[in-house]
Image 1 (spheres, one colour):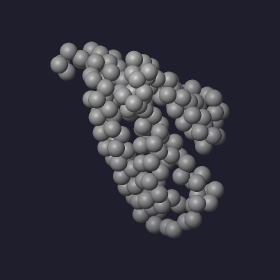
Image 2 (tube, helix red, strand yellow):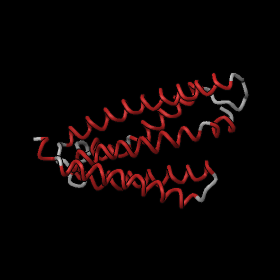
Image 3 (cartoon, rainbow, N blue to C red):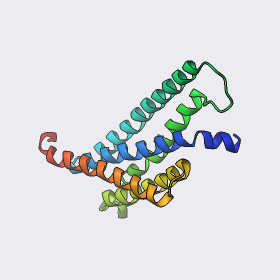
Image 4 (tube, rainbow, N blue to C red):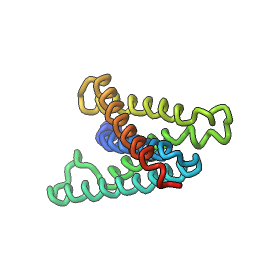
Length: 173
């Protein structure tokens, strides 16, 4: 792919990566707050990762296809619906998997086990900052401000999910 083409689909990458990280970490935080087992957290996280990633990719595909059909023109700058879907799906799954890493690795690396949620928080924060910085670059805003904004928004979503899980943990038993 040419550099211009890569940059053309960078917004889909940022969109998918941000949403994948936010939603997956929200699932992890909510399930952890509800005191669900690590196995259940992994199952819920992976189900979210692939189900929601596919849903976002298809939605992006249909949206881009509709936009292309409405404009009824073939411009070299116009995005290809299949490429927007692929960029969205892979960024959602790849970056969105970060909140699950410590839970998946804990059985293989026992030293991680006792603090797997803390490691998930740290890794997710790093992912939010990185994606936010890239987003800032894409939209032409200050990278640090964009990174901090993404971290704040993701943190709020995670806190809400954790709180809901914590408050409802009694019904999960």
